[in-house]
Length: 322
Image (cartoon, rainbow, N blue to C red; front, top):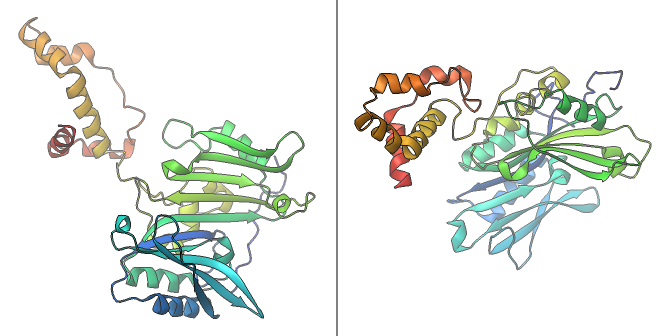
């Protein structure tokens, strides 16, 4: 592993939340516009970014939306693409989408104001990338591999999936993926300096991509970035010395999961239990002791076991399965 283990302070001009190591590198949010217009939204973004923003109607759709406007930030004498607004289309149920990739996020100075805007629009974040740069190689791709092998990315008993990209044999432009984006969370550890053309650069980036599948990404993550970055995987809190805040999945690991287990036990073995009880003469208590195994299923969060399954939750599952 690398000898120096101190996270550098990434430079983010004029950021509104001090002492944050993590920064936003991608933001997608959807909302119903209400009284908002495209022109009004562009004005709001211009105010937040402290620079003129213009939009060009592309005359075509994007990401499932019937129409789209590409956004450009005026940086000095040039116009820099910084995202898009998608709108229209029956499948989108009247929502709009604003998408700001890394090039646009790097220009945003006041993330508290962006959060305020999204709260005003009652928006839902559908993708959020939080990244930390290790400019001098304080933590590397090799370290990410070692952390994984040591189980430091495992948070619920089962290690996340991995994949790789780049030239690993010659140690160039390597990326290690931990988790899967389609499951709602993935970490990318990659050689950012190599990506930008400098093969001698030690600059490594650790980046977590959150998706809205089975989870609600809080707007607070835009301003309290460190704790949500740290909460993505156990080892990340060590890297930036931060308290962690985990974004829970909609199917919680305690009460709901126990209800799921009970529902599927009933569906799979209910008739077997009935036969053993009514035909073979097993008393229910002795039958339970016969099949009981001491312990807690790996999928169940120990801190929430005390809540137990609710019968209403089991009944809800049964109705959905019917």
